[in-house]
Image 1 (cartoon, helix red, strand yellow):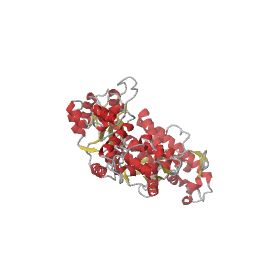
Image 2 (cartoon, rainbow, N blue to C red; image 1 turned 90 degrees about the horizontal axis):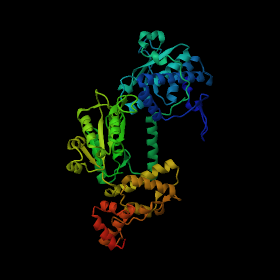
Image 3 (cartoon, rainbow, N blue to C red; image 1 turned 45 degrees about the horizontal axis):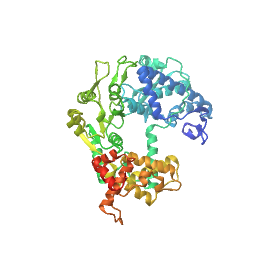
Length: 538
């Protein structure tokens, strides 16, 4: 066996139906890279950087040693040299990193490599933002453990540059203990204790690789189900939505604060993700919080962090979301729900670009882009005195108003088909399309719950459909019974009949709640009651 012959299919043994998997003869697990990123974040928040680094480095070292031991007998190697060099290729086969070996750059180096697509750097940036030091601790531990076992002497691999701290690429050097001299003193504490036996032997492909596969799958589904092209999960066939998406893409190129407005369920958070993903901050985290779901004290702690002892239960220092989103984007959903006192604190953070943790007297600079969203009319609330005008104008540097689904009927079918394609692939469903009657009802219904309601209705229909097409009976009752709200050729009804049908459809959509129906129709409750009485509805 030569190094170039090493193939993942020869190393990984598993039954397609699931069960015990083995890698080079040892039991292995597939773990999601994002979950490992959450574990890293928890370790750092609990133990601090030094403690987390020590645990992850020793874990990697143990993983590397066990892998080297297993690989020694797994294949009939042409020479011991081929086995010793296999560690870097295994790093790649296991989805941890793509190494590029270098030679001659450092005369004292035992090994020297560039690391591309490091999952550790990627996950650290995603969950914690830019670090002040190199962060590929598990990978350095793995390389050190493998090389040390294979060469029967201690070899320490240390990152000199790292994407996790803002460098363009990760660069690693491995030297013997003697060659490092005193320069290794700061790294040795991470290796002091015996390595941990790894229950985890393999991580899945990095998030970037997963996203590439998902994009390919989405394109295949789009060809099968005739799904219209979407940007960031947002369909923009209608002129109104195309205008919003085009403006969002222009806004993404600058760093201004954005206020996204629109009714509940129109896709405000998806628009925020689109802006982030197409911005210069895309490699960093987008951190989201629903401001209306938390009381003031908890919201302040979540946003700004706290010091140990700041309140009952604060057993350790904790950075807030402003710090966690450093270098990235902070999405403040339901911003119109925050109290006047919280508005003052948020305004200061936005103006000064610095925050102060609860219980602390030290200010900390923050580098985040803020995108806020609300379904309220903040201008009216400013006039009413319930929302600060200075915060409103600070948030509303650029405003994007997402139109409701009833105002962009050209998007209804593309959205429905996109949801159908996604669900059919995930559920392995045989449903591929809609009947003409179902299409007609989808276009007739006013969609008070907007895109969210449409997606839920399609999911229900996919589950209930007995054939290969969704029919009217598979849709929720209020949708299947919706009367026409737009002109259909051959429809000879009068304006009064159309008005009656629309009012009754809106009433049904709100479950018979007349107050909500009147608010939706933008008419007084007395007017609605009078019209319903004329229709014979009591």
